[in-house]
Image 1 (cartoon, rainbow, N blue to C red):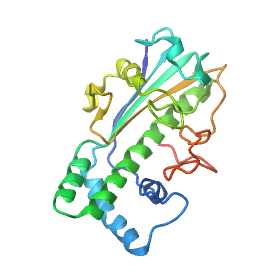
Image 2: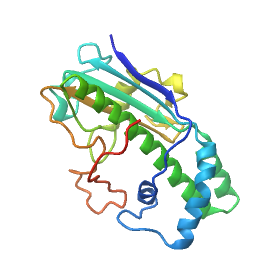
Image 3: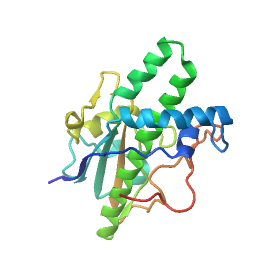
Amino acid sequence: MPETLSTVVWGTVELPLERVFRYLEYAGSSPSKPILEKINALIPKTRGLAKPQTLSSISSVKEAASLHKNDLPTPIQNTAFLAFGLCTVGPAIEQEAERLRETGRLLDAMILDALGSAAVSELCEQVAYRVFDWAEERGLNASRAFEPGSGASRWPLENQRLIFANLRAEQIGVELTSHLLMRPIKSLSFLIGIGTEIKQASAPFSCRGCRRTDCPYRYEPSGSSPQRR
C-alpha cells in the first residue's frame, strides 16, 4: 500500500531572501535598498495570507496508479519506488496581488507575487527533503525532484495527470484544470525516484543540467542542505 508521508498545514511559511530575489529575477545579485525595504515590509502580509499545506506519498512502482514506465524521466526508469509531492500556499496571495495590480500598485503586486512563489518553493523543498530522509533510513538513494513542464527536468507537463492520480489533491484544496494548470496558482508538484539503482541527488531541486544558462530564475544550490523540519 502507498505510504502517506505528510499531510501538513504549517503554522509559518519560510521566506529566505535569496529565494525571493530569484523570483524577482535578481539571481546572483541583490535588489536596491528601496526594493529590499518593500520586500521586508510585505513579508508579514505574505505570512498572514499564506495557508501552507503539503501532501506526499510513496508507492512502489507496481502500486502506482496510471503509470506507464516509459512516462518516467530517463534517470529514474529503473526506480523501485516513486514519491509524489504536492504543495500549496492557498489562493489568498494571488488574490491580493491581483487586487494590488487593479489599484495601480504594480511594484507591490510584483513583489507579493514573488514572495508567494518563494513560499511554495521553499515548502516543496522541505517536503522533498523528507523524502530524502525516508530513502536514507532504508538504505536507498533518492533522485532529484522532477516537476512536470520544468525546463530543468524536461519532463512533459502532461505528467501532472500521473501525480494527481496518485495524490488526493482535494485534501489540500488543489485542483488540476483541463489545461493541466494547478489551482491555486501558488502550488507545485513533483516526483522523486527511490531505489538502489538510482543515483543519489545532492539536492532535490536544481537547475543544473538545464540548457538555459542565462535564465534569471536559475537555481543551483551549493553547500549544505536547508534545515529539515
